[in-house]
Amino acid sequence: MKNRGLSSYSSREQGLELSCKLAREQLSKITDIQEQCRKSGARYISDGQIAVDYLNQPYCIALPDVEISLEDGEVEVPVKEKILILHYFIMAKGRPASGALITYKQLPGGISYFAAFSQRAIAPLVRHFGKSPELLLEAAANLGGREADYGDTAVTINAFARVPMTFVLWRGDEDLAPNGNILFDANVPDYLPTEDVAVVSETITWKLVKAIPFT
Image 1 (cartoon, rainbow, N blue to C red):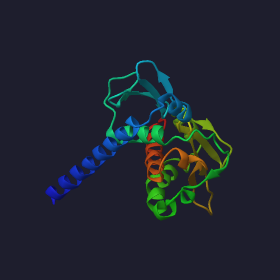
Image 2 (cartoon, rainbow, N blue to C red):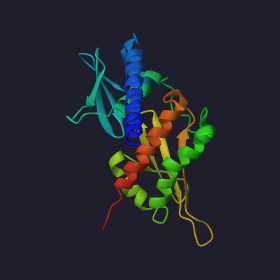
Image 3 (tube, rainbow, N blue to C red):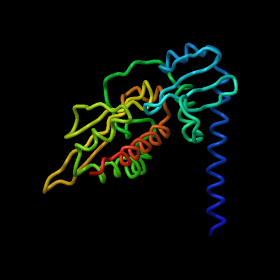
C-alpha cells in the first residue's frame, strides 16, 4: 500500500514536470514576445525578462531558458504554479473582459467536472465563510480583491491580469443553508484551459480560508 502511494505521487510529479516542459517548449516557439506581453497584460523587461502578475504577486519569466521565479523573492516556485503562469502567458488572446459572467459548468467540458470542482473550490468557501460572509472581504485584501455586487457578499480577484474571478456567498437563513459560487468572465477560455481554471479557483479558495482573521 505504501509503495503504491509513493508510485502515485511520483507519477503525479512526473506528469507535472512533463506539462511544464511542454509549456516551456511552446513559449520558446513564440516569435513576438512583446506582442504576447500585450495580449496577456504582462510586462516586457529588457534582457529577455517578462513580468507576469499572478494572485497579486509579480513573477519573472527569464528567457531563453524559461526559468520562473518570484520577482521579489528567492522562494522556489512550485511546478504547478509554473504551469499555470506559462499556460496563461502562452494562451492569452488579448480580448478585453466581456462583462458577462459564467459559471464553471459553462466552460468547455466544465459540466463533466463540475461535481469535483464544486467539492474542491466552492464547498470549502461556503463551509468557512457561509455563516460570516463579511469575513470574505477582509480575507481577500492580500490578493487584491475588490468588493463585487453579487449575492450577500462577493469579491472579484484577478488571478491574472486578464482573468478576474468572482467569489459569491449567500448567507442563508433558518430555512436555507448558506450557498456560494465562483463566476468567471465569459472570455476566460481565451486565457486558461478549463482544468487550470479549476486549479486556480481551488488555490484562491484555500488562500482565502487561510487568511481568515482570528480575533
